[in-house]
Length: 627
Ligand SMILES: Cc1ncc(C[n+]2csc(CCOP(=O)(O)OP(=O)(O)O)c2C)c(N)n1
Ligand SMILES: [Mg+2]
Figure 1 (cartoon, helix red, strand yellow):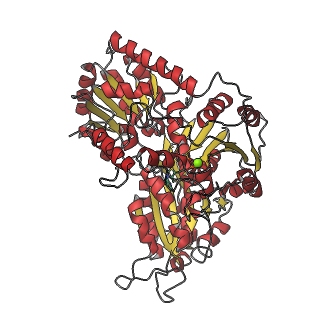
Figure 2 (cartoon, rainbow, N blue to C red):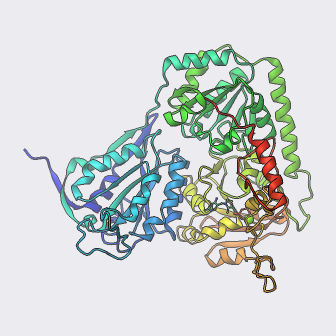
Figure 3 (cartoon, rainbow, N blue to C red):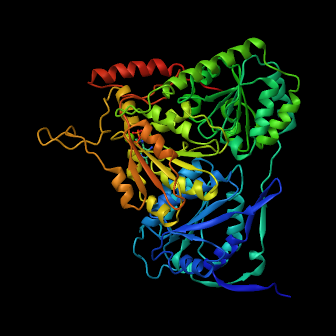
């Protein structure tokens, strides 16, 4: 007896397959692919495009304005769904495909699933070279889609229609793997997309990918528990893995029982929702004074679901106790083995629960409890001062970014989500924002990709329509990828976009100044007729007019009171609102007992650079090897 088959094009089979995939964790089942974004060209219009049209009831199609942006939207959607759901992205060949590469890198680096389907050159080669084809004299097998390889966790080129029968299940395995997930790229030659094949009907059976809560090794757990019991100044670093694993309750239970304080990474902010007496706030290069002093003196650091990037470790200067040891809880071995830690390779929630049982009865000593309380209270007083909690809202002009953050914090509800990615905002928010819910703080700070913000905000709102979504974006980032406002208008997606206009790249300007280079190349200046240098008048952009031209309701506010009024006005439920806030470029919040390794020129004729180099060499001595 022959198994039943169905004759479909490869593209039709692929779409049909995707509509049948589900994930399930803790008994909650949901469709894996929430829809497909795509921009068509000759590389996908008649293949995937035709298949999407034919399957439009089962797979919703969305038209974005830029391929990089649509990958950010998919990643934000996936992050908001704790990686249990994502969106697929289809592009044409050539530039449409390569536009997705920054998005792929951002997703992979953040360990967030996205399914990318770039069109590719003819597998049959006969009409080669086709429009937009990269020609290699050495290997005709190469195409621009090979550039996706290093930024994808799974990569395949579908050169025969039957290949998807094995490639698709493999791709779904990686997409849904807590440890291996990231960008999954299937390059689809345009001729093969349209080719028919008798596919086994079983390929289209509904399939549920059960997301495991992998258990850590029991011996390592016992070893870790013994280390906690003998520690005097333990500290937990909570990363994004806590949130993805929905481990906030387990984390709270552990810290309530033991008195261990928590510092949060950018991805982990909200892991221990505030207010909580042991929440020391952001940690690392952009961390709070409380978290950074606790880190400096900690004798044991329990890292949960973090990649331990340089921002988290302040370029390996954050932990200064000579005998400091690390325990890591992570689904990925790559992360679990960092800092010579005792690796608990497994799911965050499961490991925190098991660890909690093993350390029952342990509590930090009173002296440490008192120090934690003192540091957290002192930090909160500082943060309130910085946010201008007591200042006059009606004062016009000279608005300062941290005060604007203060007004936002007061206006938003605990369930609202802020979205941000690059510039000076992430550092200020990491220190100042009080995340009152695990999904309240959505920062893309693995790739810190300018342009993520608005596209990401769309994905967040699509994933959580019940939440208010506030995109916080610098003027520089806005100018890189504002066009997705038109997509939000088209899809009637109500998000609020707050543009912080400080007329240029203030964060990098500040960094450059601190390294002796005086902010070179970071302001929007006309080229001077007199000198030929970029030191003429400021080039200013009318962001409100720009946003309005894309279809948003837009305004510019000149005072904190006007900002508050704009934020609390009833928001339309059928499209984006853009609020432009001019902020002082030079009023910036410094670091708190932290450092970030950015090398300064070893030789220079500039005295300022020489001074910065000396300071750099001194600071670098605090960098540690954890072997
Ligand atoms: C795509 C991309 N290009 C360059 C950078 C490097 N970079 C980081 S922040 C920044 C300036 C951001 O300017 P803006 O959005 O206005 O924020 P501000 O620094 O003024 O707060 C630049 C160029 C980046 N992160 N992403
Ligand atoms: Mg700026």
